[in-house]
Amino acid sequence: MRNIAAKLVIGVAITAIGMFGADSTAGTWKYNAAKSKTTNTNPIKSQTDVREATPDGGAKDTRTGQLMDGTPSNYTYTYKYDGKESPVTGAPFDTISVKRIDANTTSFEVKMTGGKYHLTGRNVISKDGKTLTQTSKGTDAEGKPVTSTIVFDKQ
Image (cartoon, rainbow, N blue to C red; front, side, top):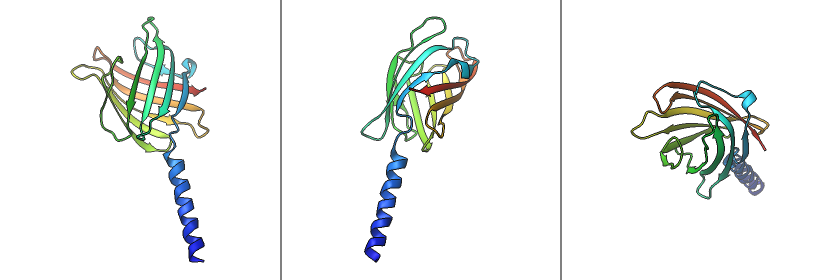
């Protein structure tokens, strides 16, 4: 009887670890302009993020899109969910740090070292896994305050 109970406990623990360990942000996410709002002076016109889990437990985000003024916004970066800064090139920011709060929520900070661009925020995946809502606040490259709620639909 003890042997059966021990196997049951181990099985439940492995299942729980597997469910929590799955990255709910993985997939292709498309910007939903109708549900998004921002105070940014050059907001997103279009954007698609492809997020992939990495073997080390982190994530890789490949972003393609365009800002309202026609500037392309295409770059890729990787990070871990440990809250430590990871380098980024080709983006409006040069570091990102991300921390997992729960299975569907992460907090993040992006900034340009030596610059004025600095945002903090959260990504929240809906319970049905179909919507990613990113809220952030901080300062843009000119040092002006900016707040946004950006909504993405899973493809």
